[in-house]
Image (cartoon, rainbow, N blue to C red; front, side, top):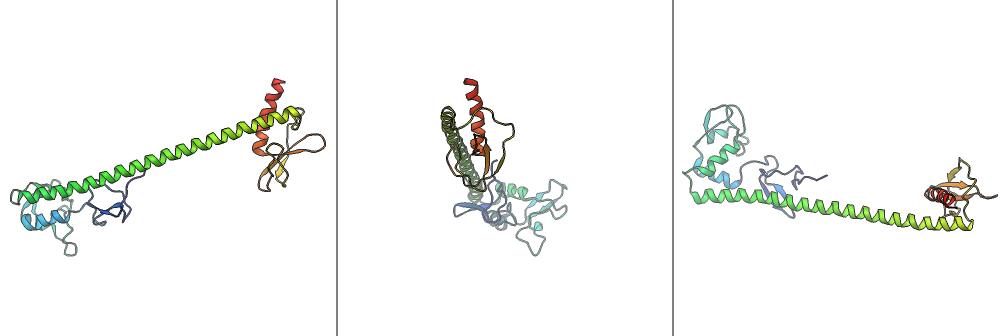
Length: 234
């Protein structure tokens, strides 16, 4: 599953509409409390040229002057809500700032470029993040394939060992009871792989003359498959 790009400060998911800045090797909100607030450059344009201009509210149909948006004395520099219906007018404010003919065009262009740069920063960070995610998933697939190949190769090698032991009589292939007893390993050597059976491993005891042969559970499964093939080909 693709992991979303998050703010390096508050760890919330980043949107192209958020106001961001580069932080070390990551990207973060300029203000995590108001991730889509006006940029410093946009506010400079607002206070310098458009403070008393009117904008319309698309929700209630009323108009207000931009300075009326700052109705909260404790967060006067953060408010972009309609004073009548409290709908956030931040995009309407931006549209006005970018198109108002009473402010210098060169400043408006610079403000738009700053905003566009922030959007590109989020996009580039997301692209790099996605590429890293793809590479990680490809590495996981490659590691899984390698493990499967090693397991398959080991299984094939063990099958050849079992076939040889079935031919020379080291392992039985006939007259095997339906129920095979099992229990914790006791340190005995496995009759297939010759490795010790530890106490935390399941040990299967297959009958063979007077002394049962201990096998690991995995070795037992391989032996059981190979003995049936051996009987069919005999």
